[in-house]
Image (cartoon, rainbow, N blue to C red; front, side):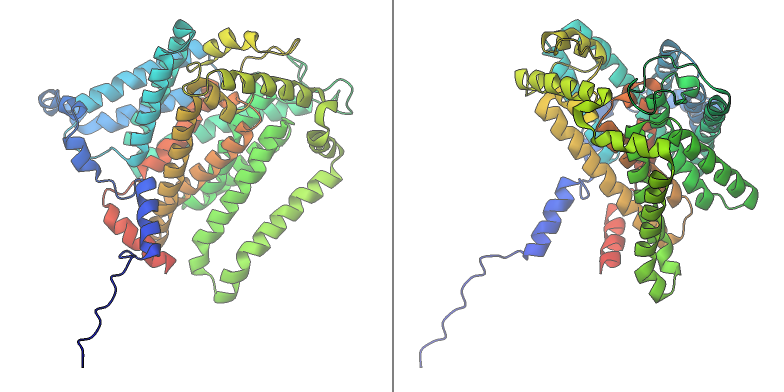
Length: 485
């Protein structure tokens, strides 16, 4: 008898499912060993340069992070009420304090995959600024973007403390409540329209659109999307009944004020963000439910939510008319304006598709007149996604999408970890993710989040997600794998 034929080598030594998992983990930076990368970075050599000074300072030893949280919360307390210039001064203070903390840091922790993508986008924006056809105008936008990103860096650091996280979020929610109360006062007692916000030929021409202290109903609507999501999350995150009752009041007041802005983009963002919030809350609570309700809780809650929205649209005439105007095409003046601006913006993107024209509205205003349709002047692209493409090109847009992917993946991963541990702080994470989704959906048709009161909130949401990062990634992955199985 001849010797047995040797088995053919396996052409796929790695199982396809394992290969897909490895690709996904690499794409989302789940397996990135950040401490090793940090120690090998040239920039890291500057970290700790003032370590000896910090050790000799009693104030910095005991109160370094609380002081940072206090400086940051002042930004959110004042942003709706003060000028852009003053917000800029506060952002400079945040940036300076973050630099002080970093130079006197005593540990290697704190950098997350989200930080890496934010840094990469900043590098791309810097290159876009250097190569911009209107370089000096782009420098102005680059400076603002840099301050926002440094605010993110400070927030991601101080929000790691649950106590400081609750302090900062509560400060924003109380401020948003004051803004919403003023909006409700305008609805009941009237408010002078500061601009033509409703088509004069529509049935809503005489309807009051509240704008509170922000001066624009679309801006107010964008500001209140995170307020609604976080105040709803506070109902579950706060343990005592009195704070829970306050959270219910906040949620109802913020929701009512947002609806009365009659901002169609904010409405869509509110509905989509609300659905995400409901999905995540039901998912969180499902482990405590009997088997029947685990299966049917999600469909029933979503069905009831959808029925409520549809009923409200059909029953309330102003709401119905405003919703129908979304589908009026060019017959609605607001729709027609945006369509013409978007057409011009697409021409701008085709002219500089790789790195764009550089960041900021100043650069946009310098270039847009060369492409605009007659009679349709604009201060922005009226779409966040188009704005990113215009400012930083396809390269920056790809990085932006990558940042969103990594952020949402990190958020979902940490929700699983906190859910298994029964940690109520996970509800703030749920609120942050729902807020981001709502703001992104609103951003499809508007660019109000480039204004300081909203841009600061966007970076707060990303910082909230980053602050939950577990610096033991292998443990997190094991927990997520067990959850999937």
